[in-house]
Structure formats: C-alpha cells, structure tokens
Length: 102
Image (cartoon, rainbow, N blue to C red):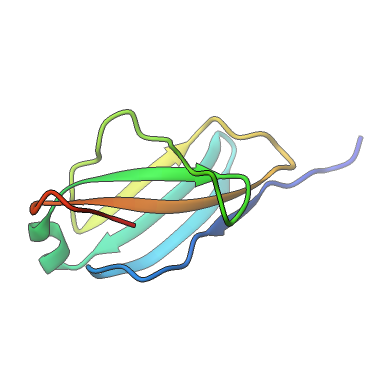
C-alpha cells in the first residue's frame, strides 16, 4: 500500500484588508488553515467564510456553515478532505459595509 498525500493551495488575490501568515497544514483529521488579521481588518469585518475548490479557477464552495467571528489570530479545520486530492482555499471577507471581498 502506497502513501498518498493531499495537496493544498492557497488562492492568491488582492484583498482590501490585511491578511497575514495564511497557511495550510495537513493534519490527521484534515487540513488546518491559519491566518492573522490586522487590527484594522478585525474592526472592519463582521465575519469570514472559508471556501474550497479542486481547481484554481473554481468553482469554490463554502466550507463554513456560519461566518467565523473576526479575530487577530484565526483558524479553520477542514475535516472533509480526501487523501490524494488537491484543494484550493480562499477567504470570503464579510465587511461591515455589506460588501463581500475575496
């Protein structure tokens, strides 16, 4: 029996607020995403959704049932992954102004 890995990509793109240290780590139970928001971003957002796709161009699907509460240090574990598959992740930022941003 061979060992198979899951490949994780983080979707690049311009973000109107500061996201730092966006990283993905393969764990026994799935993929752990971690990131940091700037203090300004924490104030300007009302929530964060995590989205995933199997290709860079999408389609992307929400992985969070409810928006995550903005915090300086954030994380989300995606436990519904298939070993050997490649995934792309991005954050959907819900701004207080009502405008979502990727």
